[in-house]
Amino acid sequence: MGKEALVVIDLQNDITKNYKTVIINVNHSIDWAVEHDVPVVYIRHENLSAGTRTFKTGTAGPSSSRT
Image (cartoon, rainbow, N blue to C red; front, side, top):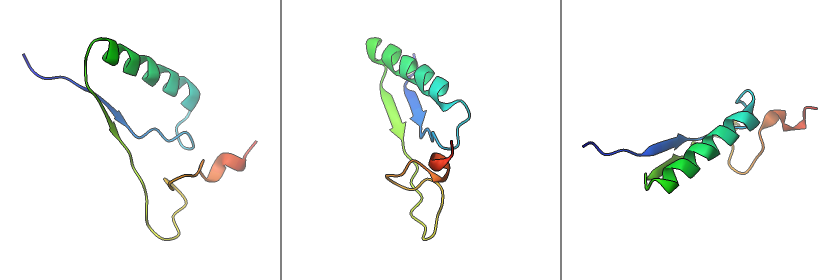
């Protein structure tokens, strides 16, 4: 039997449409994986380039001030 894992690739609430629903679904998947002893691997993207407007560490993103 092959090995399996749940891979969660960096969710960006600033640029993901309907991010609240997406995050709820991802959290359910994580809960399922943990309950079934499936490893969960998290991959995080950070843009460390000078002057970047996206993927900045520790920020809510450029559109966070939108209403």
